[in-house]
Every structure is written in C-alpha cells, then in structure tokens.
Image (cartoon, rainbow, N blue to C red):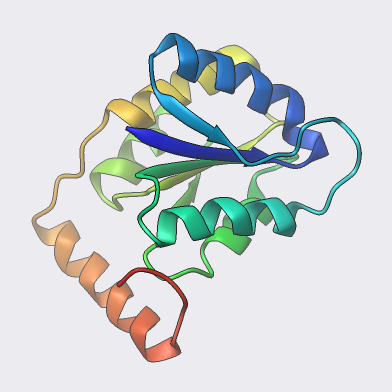
Length: 153
C-alpha cells in the first residue's frame, strides 16, 4: 500500500509521528508537506494529497490540520475522494466499512499521538464491506459526475 500524507503547521508534529509509525508498519508513505511548523495554508497541502488519491497514484491519503475539518472539506472537493474526519476507533472503522474512505483526516490539536496511531492502524486494517454500501457510493459518484468534479472516475 502507498499512502500520501500532508499537514499544515498545526498538524506537523502529529504528521511526523504518524510518518514514523507508517515506516514501522512498512507502509510506503509519500510526504507532501508541510516540512516545518512555519505557517502554511491547509488547502494548499490538502489539494496535493487529494489529487494523488483522485488520480489513483496512491491508494490512500492522510491529512492533518488543527481540527481536521478544513483538510476534509478541501479533499472532498475531488471526484473519487472520500475523506473522513475521525476522532476515535469507531469512526475510523465505520468510515472504511461503510464509506470506503480513502483519506483519513485528523485533528492535530484534538487527539494525542497514541490515539492517532490507533485510529490510523484501525483505518488501514479495516476493509470495505460493499453490499448496500456500494450502492450508496455509486450514488455519490453519480453526483460527482453531474457536478463535473476533477479526478479518477
């Protein structure tokens, strides 16, 4: 699996920790920034990760800002991207089982490193259930096509 990750300045410290955790898990991580705690605009980083996921260049993405809200809003502008803001193990698991989320958004100012690692682990290990959930994702894809969103169809 290859995963693209990015953060703004508020998520930088957590991104660095999770990048190390991904390496421990032997998961190939493409770090798209930011590379310091200097202030950056979260949309600039979110676009880089979301484009990689939307084009199918990576299987999944990880975005971290102060709350995770801004990153998830930007990422969900791209066709085929299903970014899920998760705060606990349950939302991480369900975002994969029911929504086939391909980007995980986290709040660097809201959750600690230990919990973030567990959320990421559960999110990476959980499979999409398909079935009735597939029908719903197809409806989202149809809405994206109608709206003319960019990305892999």
